[in-house]
Length: 221
Image (cartoon, rainbow, N blue to C red; front, side, top):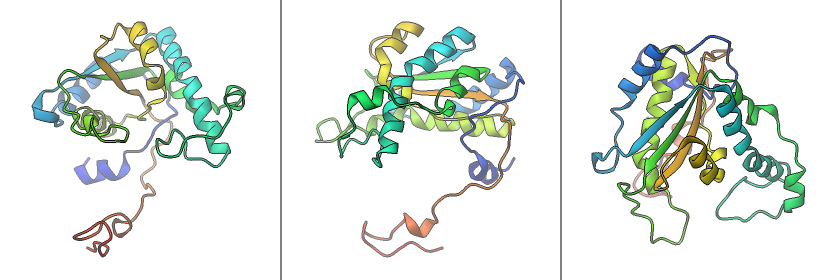
């Protein structure tokens, strides 16, 4: 596939067929994705490939409490897990919120789950002293995750970028033997998608790109 076609059609795949994802295909995905940039080219990311069904199911279970909070906030009209506006949803309501199967099924049922972590001793978190949640450190790991999803699409496979299990990071670390100084950044189920959409809905360029200043005129092609 042409690069722009891959970029325009890489979607969040959450339903997979029973087709396996062979090691040789997965190796090609990693071998091409590894050229993603990272801060100082320190390449502190690590990918744990999980195929064992029981382990995949346990990872899905560890993400369930975060998914309950996400869906409870969504039902209450809030922006889930927002760091600016604290949730007003009581914990009791969260604990009894039913979540759609789409929150856990991709991880439990995908043939392969990739757990991506990053070594905090080599990450440049240049926003660590700002009075807000940190984001800059993600630049050293998330380009790799997205490259893997692009490569999977090119190979005829797909997946989705999930972070619910990150809220249970300590338990995920113990489950997979991840070192204490590695932050869990993403859990990515991969497989052969049940469907292959070719048209995605996204904002137009003029809706999120401006010239000169944030409040400047919209950028037009």
